[in-house]
Length: 293
Ligand code: ADP
Ligand code: MG
View 1 (cartoon, rainbow, N blue to C red):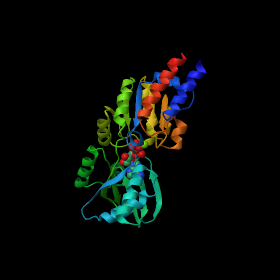
View 2: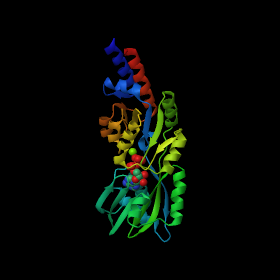
View 3: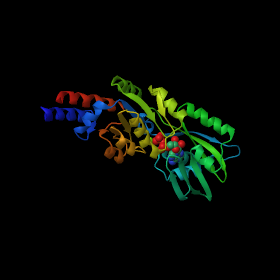
View 4: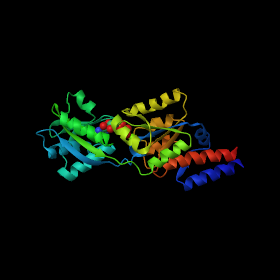
């Protein structure tokens, strides 16, 4: 009866858009008690748009957009794509970039029109002694409490603008979080974004534990730390910065809409970008296991 039950389980799984790597995965679904959710692209759509541009006194908005847009054009990050697209729409053709560097989890830098331009976290600009003026700090804080991500733009010794990108929470995420709780799982939101943004998104979907401002390379350590506390951890991510964490988790669930790396790292692949299928996958796997035993 065992092989038949497995086939039924995986066949039903395929119908629901869930791919299971192997039979040993089923056992992991029974043990897990905690589910870590990556914010961008997992709980949120991950398709961001440039929503607000705030420039410092005396700065030219079109120039800010040209320089920041040119730089972000060289990056694949969802924030970068939103800024490059918005900048091209508003400011026209973007200039070339030299000496581009992607500073993972912090932002980007490069030379545009002879200026060394930085776009990213305020902490990145602060390393170059570029600090936001008070009105821009306020604009950033106001955006963040609404769940929007604000990044700073600076060059030649001064911070010059704040660009705000909006992402939207997937309409199905709140229901997915409810289902995780019904399955006895404690949901935790994990992100490199600020605590303010994370808190806003968490509140919207009903999560009360947030681990924010985590650098991409440190996401795996968060999973290890939770495991060290005696938890059995499931992790859902899209592979952008979180493939190592997916692999470390007792159960890694990768969004099929994410990267190939995620699909490689995960135990279960959710073909649809819908977080509810993570709950379906766990429920179905546990039930399949019960049928076998
Ligand atoms: P997440 O955990 O949401 O996937 P990341 O770890 O990739 O986010 O990035 C963390 C933070 O670093 C972002 O919220 C942003 O402030 C900054 N950042 C990263 N890459 C970029 C970029 N290309 N342009 C601007 N800011 C960036
Ligand atoms: Mg991510």
